[in-house]
Length: 479
Length: 159
Image (cartoon, rainbow over all chains, first blue to last red; front, side, top):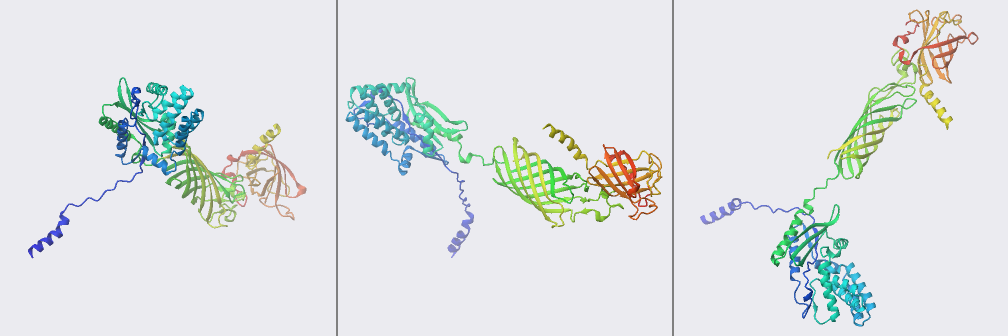
């Protein structure tokens, strides 16, 4: 019984005695930025060992190791989705682009070459090269692109166009620098030309530009739907072997390398670490979604002060009278194209032509409502709609000249000779258009024109109605 | 084009000032006698006018001295004062009435034409056949008129 009670006590108390399990925290989900890694290329060419007994044996391990290191460094960043050449190839196949055209031209060109129909072979192979370039097969299927250049070079050579053959062989080395050829398979003249091309490639080819040109690399970036392209390559010279890392991405001043670094190649492990560090260094400064400032480009709170003019289109005087004053306005940008606003004006009237406005009046006008706006780099345009309240000091008008000369309330001007408003407070609806033109920084020039219709007091007790206003002033966008 | 500009140069200022050109005071340089009105006998007539476009209001003073400075004269309130085509028309009931009283009622009528900016010329009469030519010259402009210039009680005696 005691044991049961003890067990029960433990069962009740144990959960409260245990430390509380931390609630699983979910990191905010940011969209991933896709970054492509081109197959690393090993440009440490040895022209003397191009022709071997077994051309399929090894040679590409160092480059593959560097490609894997770059992909691993990118994969370590949660906001980056690395895209390898094989990913790109799979996406192409899914989209129905399988390099069929280029492959077809390759086989046709090879067949024509064997039949020594060199002109036709060259035409077919050139088309194949074009098709391969347009489909970025030098990334997705480098062996296919390499074969196209090889047989194009051989065809040119057989035709006697040694210079064009030389160019084709160099392009082959750029696509597959570690390619080895079967010794004795090609004529001695061809072997010599290929070796010469390899020697020249080492000396003159601009291997530091990915895919043979910035424009083409940017086209690949677009085709692969990636934000940046990572390009790693190995070079060898008399001074030593080096690993170079380049990251190409568009910047504010055009596309260029946002990362360009290199280091000496000692062994595979240290080279892989070096590539990882270089890629991580780029990631550290890259524009990732979580690092971007929240979009707050548009000012939210605007205030302006202005000089204003008003004219009532319906008036008890025989001729219209004018009013002038100043105003202050506030606007709060609720959404990108929606704002709320409030505006206060103080107006003073001027005499009309016949002095029918016996007493000048001062008025305070208040408008509040919502607006629709468009914002551009040069400024903003608003359409505002709201309710308007207009309070006037005593408004007295008369067409009796005695009231004007002797004054209201004298023996010559009785109450029946003057018109007064039934209410000093007028209420109605207001519509206005406003243009803000940025002068510099947050300061802008504000022009506004508006129109109102008063429905209180109801006609015919509203001899003063339909005010038109225009204002010009300066404003400030606070934040 | 030159004609247009010249016309505009003449008309625009005229249009702007035309609505208030009479405002101020005008006085006869010589004493005037209006037949049929006993109170206006050898009196200097002074008109204090307020001009508002087509409408004119004012007071007519009948003084014994040339400056109209003493409270010696009766006055009358202008009625139906109009301004049209450069001619001022008004009437007033003379203080003390008419003798004899005409069949149309006792009312002094005036028809005066403005010459330049400072001279009103025309005639005043109770009966059409008893017109008295009068000439008044400006004494005050609009801003110079003071409250006392308009203090004419309904009996027509205060200044």
